[in-house]
Length: 94
Image (cartoon, rainbow, N blue to C red; front, side, top):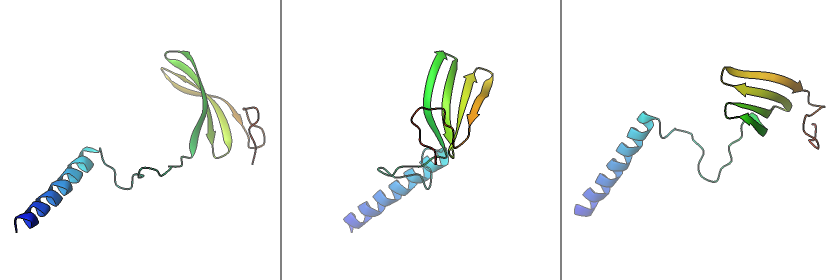
């Protein structure tokens, strides 16, 4: 009987910890498990830091590439390339 109560206590403790972490936002339902690759619609291809607060990012969004400038006041789209014409040398168009 003592082992049964110990198992129940451990299970309730685990359930309480999961509930607490979900409530605080540390554990998210449906989050990918270890070993599973998560796909994102936006991919960062490259980044160049110009200053500590300024950088240029090359992003790929659904086959299109965008050159974006990031600065303290926001972001600016510098240029966009269509699917057939990519900004990166050797990139294959689909």
